[in-house]
Length: 91
Image (cartoon, rainbow, N blue to C red; front, top):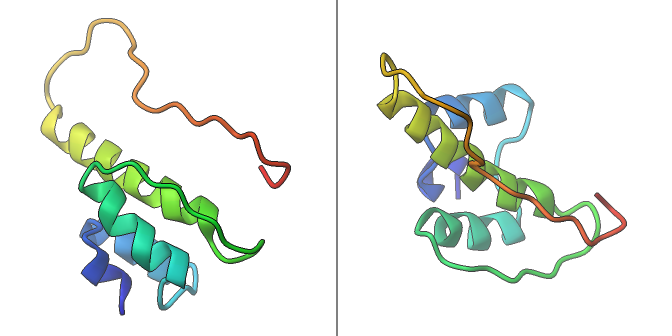
């Protein structure tokens, strides 16, 4: 399954491929589409399987769409657009 089939934006997929990754891991393939749909996710996988990318890529995807929709408009004030809590020792 290629990254493009997960529902990520083309620029994000191009960035992923440019780093040398060719296909999502199992946790990424299961979590990314659900996260893009706005569903809550609980995932468990071994260290090194791409869990961080599984939750960060949908966030970047959403932020890139928000940014594209707000081009040319002025933003008053700053708002929190993402909050990441890291209770694991990996992060």
